Amino acid sequence: MLDTALKGEIQDAYRRVVESLGLTPRYGQRMMIAEIARTLGNIESDSEGKRTNDTHVCVLEAGTGTGKTLAYLIAALPIAKARGKRLIVSTATVALQEQVLNQDLPSLASHSGIAFRYALAKGRGRYVCVARLDQELEGTDPNPTLSLFEQSLQTQSSDFSVLASDMAQAYGQGEWEGDRDNWPAAIDDAHWRRLTVDHRQCTGRRCGHFGACAFFRSRRELENADVIVANHDLVLADLALGGGAILPDPADCIFVFDEGHHLPEKALSHFAHRFAVHGCLRWLKTLRTSLTDLHQGLAVQPTVARLLTSLPELIHNLEPTLGDVFSVGHQLAGRPNGLADEEATHQLRFEKGQIPDALREQAQQLLVMFASLSRCLESISDILRESLDPDKQTGLDREQAETWLPLVALLHGRALEAHALWQAFSEQDAANEAPSARWITLSRVAGEPEIEFSASPVSAAHTLAKHLWGRCHGAVVTSATLTALGRFERLQERAG
Image (tube, rainbow, N blue to C red; front, side, top):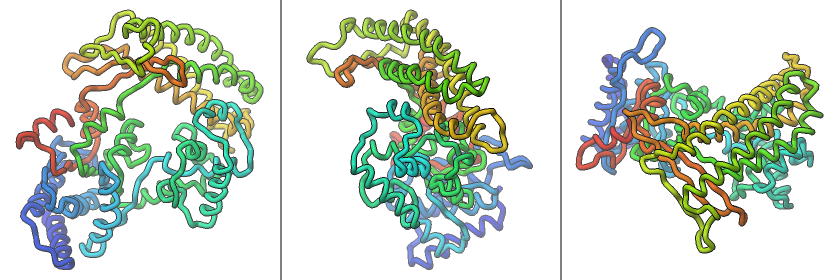
């Protein structure tokens, strides 16, 4: 139960804010505070602080004008601090995120008497990679094959050179924190892709620029924050990575999902999978053409040499199987000869997600093949990362490891994405769960025929129940529109 001292702290904070800002206490706001405090205060934990009971999610619909943000901050923050947890405030829109960060939290810090620190959390892709920026400025291309792989996404221009130079100067002088959203002008997506990395390409503490890294600098701020402001997409992306990759471990957090009615729909998109056949054949070709250079640079390491030797057979087996699934997809879609001249796209959705046996058999073959390819590329990536550590002797030169890791990590990510899609096409849906949706889309890309296979859960309930509600210490879901016909059953069904 909520102890008297903590209850008094919440009541005192609310009184201080109301009096300091000259507000009129609102009945609905007081009800929100009481309900959140009651739910979060009743969470039982073991000696290690892990939740031991199931009643830990408070769902509140409150109309515009209730003062939801103040209510959930005043109720949840003292409890989170008392329990040694972090409060994650997640919104669906940038506008609300900015309001919480720039108005509500500063006001609460000034007037409530609660001492706390807060920070904004963003994904790695929103920050410049200092190592890449440095390479661009030096005019060095440490990995020409990676550039070839990404050339359809990149542009060579004097505009980019000027941008990179301006960014380096602003970052070096402390006038810019490396955040894309805070750069004074819009940045072309193709330019930005050349200046950032994903979690697989990042070498973390082994990077020579780690001390100056914009992303890890922001992560250090999060480590000291009592309140972390995020958005639904970032929270779901973190959960998709296993939790604790970007944000703190869910077990150490109390989440507040404002605009919570968006959460189920966003969860579906984060746990969906897609696979374009010709797109895959292109990156497999890139891998095949890179093998000679990879051998020259890395085969001095015996394990890497053995793994590289296995790649040609893997690629050789994959390419014809992908050609077969390309043909089967067109036949199933009723377009064995491709799209008609007047068609831009054509889509076939499999009824109740049930796919024909012939396609399922191909999916199972591809699942095994991409599992082997993923394991091989992952093992090479691991050795390359270890080679960046001066304390580890792998027999591989650091410079060569640094050169090839971005490409190998990128291709490993592509292989994992392919594996996830074909796993979704191979699995039989559980009888007690909603089926997955499965469909194929025919289109043209740069004038060439393409077929994309897609799979998505039709309900986010099981996913959210497993990855979020089942793991977090506590949660609050609130919005002005959560009920249907005055009842919460629809939200419970969609959000698990």
